[in-house]
Image (tube, rainbow, N blue to C red; front, side, top):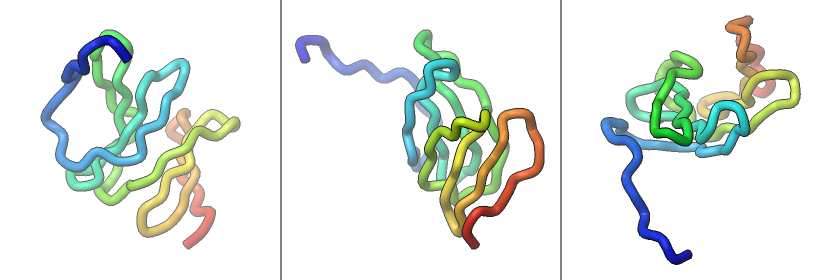
Length: 88
């Protein structure tokens, strides 16, 4: 790597579960303050899901949503449908 690292965003507490999504950008959670966010290539941040604190792991799901972990493992669809608990 020949370039320098550059801070792209600030104001979050404990960032967890970063995963790249080709449409959303860098998806991550704030485990302390709550929420799942996406950082675009031009440094815009948008809320993907409002959620209570505690999401630590995130992975993409082929069914248009994310599987997230914290006190349980759940599927959260992008269309704002109901969260489905996969493992409690």
